[in-house]
Length: 180
Image (cartoon, rainbow, N blue to C red):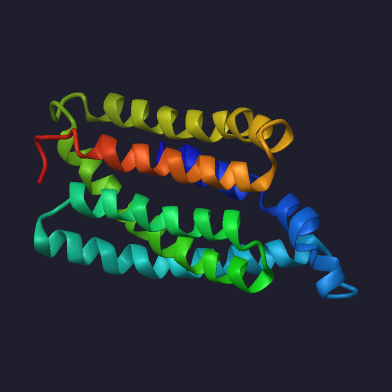
């Protein structure tokens, strides 16, 4: 659910910059693609830095479920920000916060996944299933996002939908009992 939500949010970011932020009007001579590139760099740098720090902290605390749930809830914040305050400055701030949340998720969720695998003998198969689930969520994102934007009320509905999916993802992590 967390990958689905993150993919849906990023998928429509270019159109959001073009249609809602009016990036080329704000920055004459620039295209929405230029704004997207900047946002993706900001998001990626923050996510990478946060992933390293979150992984170290999670290892020291020996906790996985809490940080993964927190990561999803952190990502709820930028989704709501974009739904309620669609401005360029808010979009930059949302990229930073989304990077923070996704960075935590990237490192700690991978550790959690390795701890819930049933047996050492089946790890390759089990990790393959996890990989397919992640890719499936990314592939499903357009099918979830497109109707929300086209028929459900536009970008606010998309981002509120993303927030809802993230909350469900955070709650789902709480159902894992075998890992602290």
